[in-house]
Image (tube, helix red, strand yellow):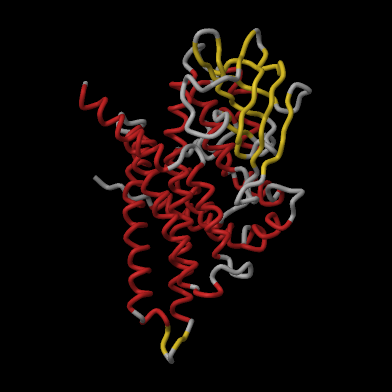
Length: 371
C-alpha cells in the first residue's frame, strides 16, 4: 500500500511553501508576537482565504474547493513549518469539521461558505479548566435555546466570531453552535507561552445558541471532531519539527568552532540524528492517520491517537534540540528557534496533551481487544 502523496498534492505542497515563505516569514510571526493588541495577522488570513485554503476540504456546494482531507494535511504541514500566526486550525480542523460532521443542511449552507471565504473565524470549546475533560466534568448548560457557563482555555476564542461548545443538554451532552458577537457572551484574553495563537476564557449568560447534531450525542461527536483534528494538528507539528531540523542542520554547517564546522562533532551529529529518527517516526504515523482520515476508516481513532502522540514528542524534541545546537545564542530573542519552541509547547496541549492521547490509545485498544 502506497501512503505517499500524489504528484498533484506534492505540487500543492510546493506552492504552499512558496506562498508562506513570501507572506508568512518570521517577521510576520514576530510582528504578532510583539503586538499585544493583535492575536493573528489579518493580511495573512486574507491571503490564505484568497488561496482557497480555508475551503480546501469544504464541498463545492458550500463554497469550498472540495479537494479532500489529504490536501488539507499537506496545507497543515506547511502552515506548521511557517509557524503561521493565524486561527487556521480552530476554524478549519475544529469548527468546519464539526459543521460538516454534525451540522444540518441549513447550518452548513449558512456558515460553511463564510468559513471558506475567510469571513468567519471559528473555535471549539470543550475544556472548563485544568485536567482532561470528561462527560461528568462538563458544567456548561444548554436549555431552551440558551447557553450558560464558562469554557477555559479556548484556542482563538479571543478573535473567533462563532463557537461550537460542548454543554449539558437534559440528561446528556450536546454540541451547540453559538454566535460570539452577542450580549450574552463575555471574553477574557489569556496569556500563554505562544501569543501568536490567541486564547480566551468564554463566559455565557443565557446566550442564544442552537444544537449542532443530535441531542445527547455531544460527547461522541466531540470525540469524533478531536480525532479528525488530531491528525491535522499532527501534520502541523510534523512541519514545525522538520523546520527545526533543517534550521539546526544549516547552522551546524555554518558555525565553526576549533577550526571545524560544529556539525562535524559527534555530539551535534547525535542530536541531529535523534531529531531525524523522531521526525520519521512521527511522519509514518501522520501518514497513516492521513489515510484513515481521508477514507474515514475504522482505524481512525487508533491512527489519530498514535499520530498525535508521536508528532507531539517529535516536535518537542526537535524544538528543544534546535536551541541546543545553536548553543549560547539559541535561547536568545534574535534567533527564531524560540518561535518553534513556543508553538511546540502550545500544540502539545491543544486538544489534549500527549499523555491524554496515549491513554486514549490504550483504552481504545483494550476495548477493541475485549470485543
